[in-house]
Length: 112
Length: 111
Picture 1 (cartoon, rainbow over the protein chains, first blue to last red):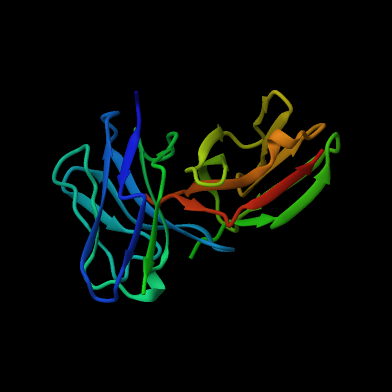
Picture 2 (picture 1 turned 180 degrees about the vertical axis):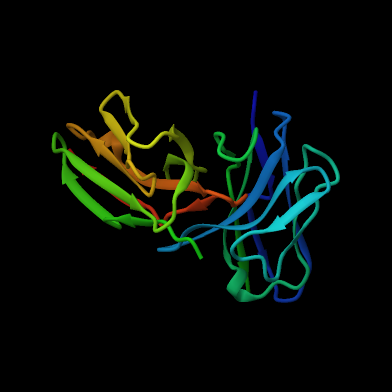
């Protein structure tokens, strides 16, 4: 089944404790991206990747890191999480820019 | 920052009514998509429009892309409770590699 898999689905952590949210797709898509979704603000792009080893900042990259060592994986790293990073995070992949984006189930992160 | 503005933000209607939601930008889109998101799920694509003036229909949903490719609308005829959800427009602006989403229209259709 074609899908984007994010883990974990839920995470509660403390300020400053490094964490990684994993994202994997099995559709051989080149374009992958991370979004955060906050009430009234919609989905805001954090980082995106056009292909392996190519990553670029989106609208809200501060406090986040990503890597794209393999085509299928695009982890999101929070080196020192802060409470303002409490949000619902989505990973998405598509064949290319402007193509249908397939989203993961989301990761609800709470930083206390 | 090239923003996508959606209106209205909230819409609550009775079953059987018609509605239109809007997506506007000050910049030209290379392509624009409409997604629907249900609670606890990621957004799911409804349609992609590319050509200015394009109209696409998906059962009771009609999507229109503005002639200048700066705006789009989604019209739902005879809304049903199953149409309830968050409707998001997303676009790639000309010359950029990022995808931007609007804040969404939260639609509630009451039986």
